[in-house]
Length: 282
Image (tube, rainbow, N blue to C red; front, top):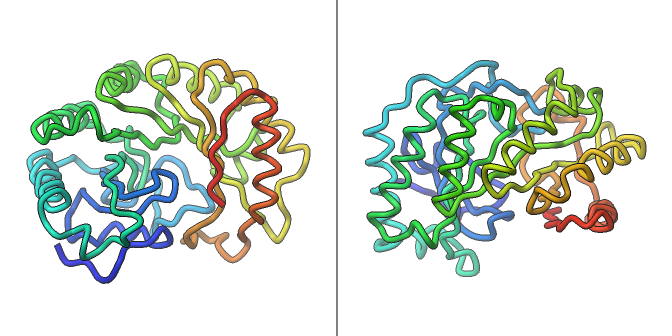
């Protein structure tokens, strides 16, 4: 692997490791080193979130996954992270903690038809390294495909592998979702997918909030969001509320800006008043 300087939370370059599917990042939400698995090597996704940091993002699904290459890359990286000098050379001292393996990358990971096979592959490799009970496997997803039996079956298996799901929900209205995620989506339908997911595996809601044209989300949107998540407070593990950390590569990039930590903390307190735990990453 050829990396330059220390990894930071502001740079999640998928090409930094020189590998096709595996890439390391310092994750502010995982709070340490996360081993990313990028199944969407063609930068294709079924959503187009306006804050997305993927360049040349296109609509679509990933190409066939080369499972043998992925398995070799995962073994190679784990060996270097655990027994080599990767941490010393590329990670600041305070971040030298291997925290998880995350299905994330350049598009929706569950859109890969091989996703169930990839999960079994990751389980096998972690078992060989005696990490299955100590290293989290996280699925970071927009949740759009949770209505498919094959995906829910895999999510159920993920729960048996010390896994959890981070499920995207950025707004509480159809208009808000269209503006942020560029998809036509009924919030209640998405909530049903969230309930299915949370029933199958420990699930956190992940919500990105930011200013658009220097204006924070309107109060009507915040209220709708709070009303929506209140319907699942008894089934989700909590909310990951986060702001912008890396530049968007979408057409709206110049219109986006960060909200203050105080603004996000205020929303977090309103979520806590619903009885839902919140982790804030400004």
